[in-house]
Amino acid sequence: MSYSLMIHGGAGALEDLKYEASEAEFKASVTAILEQGRQRLEAGAAALDVVEYCVNLLEDNPLYNAGKGAVLNENGQVEMDAALMEGKELKAGAIACIKNIKNPISLARLVLEQSSHVMLVAEGAMEFAKFCNVEPYPDDYFITESRIKQLKEAQAAGVMMLDHEKIKPAQKLGTVGAVARDSHGNLAAATSTGGLVNKRWGRVGDTPVIGAGVFADNETCAVSATGYGEQFLRTVLSKTISDFVYFKGMDAAAAAEAGIEYLVAKVNGDGGVIVIDKSGRCAAAQSTSGLIHGWIEAGGEAHCKLG
Ligand code: ASP
Image (cartoon, rainbow, N blue to C red; front, side, top):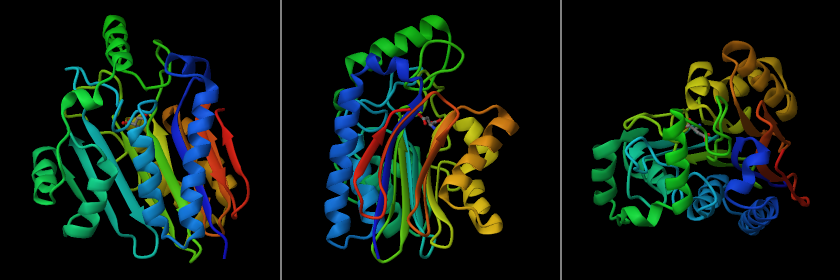
């Protein structure tokens, strides 16, 4: 049985990518991460391990809005959300509103493996990290010059915004995510974010909410979302996409399109999704002009698209 892998680095307006880096830099990083994920899948690694690994690489790269280089909230702080899920037993782990954790997705994995809960937040999640011997990183590891500049611009314009977009009512998102189907046919999904630029402290978006920003079920598909979290929460978008597969028999492409149509029709939503279905087919759809993403379908060539 062949494997498939998809990753994303957020949705937004493509013309604004130069804000952080050139298109070539985004393409090079997406392709390199896919190839590293491929090595693991080829060696027989589990989908859950591979999505965690790929999201770790995205979190460590300051180009993206997760981990190092995450966007800043209204107080100039990094507060992060992350979640992951596997499709065999529907096990999931999530953390929200955490600070000083280098790899939030790995803390979510620890919640899945070592707690009897699905989601831990804020101080309780930090206490759990300590209990698991996860070493805290200093604030200056996460905060980059370009994020300080971006926050100042958002505050001057009086807006709260997504990562990859202009100062205008529609803005940019740089959340990261991965979905995979391993050679045993198991699906998994993971999503990690710093949230929205200039968000209120204590705000939690869709990313760590199972069914909103992430979902996986071996009988349907694995989904990772990026966009205005409030809109994805209100439409429970990742589970809605899974339901299109479950109840309507759609494949990844049809379900991803139908999901984005639903997001736009119901809440005029901005964002995108990556989806791998139970047969290993890969698809992406978005309502923003850009969605940084890449995929390897059925063990084939790696592809990368920014639009
Ligand atoms: N969905 C994320 C949030 O609202 C933002 C993003 O995708 O960039 O927190």
